[in-house]
Length: 120
Image 1 (cartoon, rainbow, N blue to C red):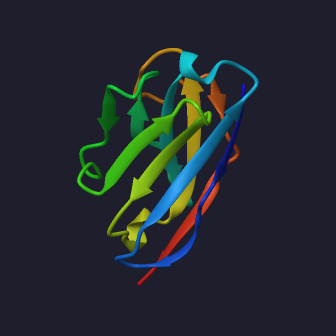
Image 2 (image 1 turned 135 degrees about the vertical axis):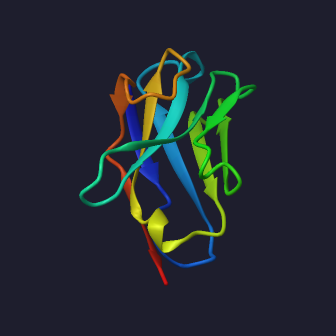
């Protein structure tokens, strides 16, 4: 399965972004999807996940008030809406796919990432 993220960029603090991840190569609705991020010099960390149907979601506690993960199985796409962005949100954001609905880093397939930079 192949994953391609988009939607990153430079945004001012307080702004918002919506990241997208298009999946190809297999049946999208067979996979749970996750978003992770990795800041420069730090470990990759879990951000959010959604199950195959979109009926269940996980969020990391520190971000859950500012994030929404959603999916459109007809478009083979998962989204991450981010609000009230802060400079500490600056990171490369990765989507990932796995047949398990998990919030660890053990996803089987990963995209190349999209950079989000938040200026103060």
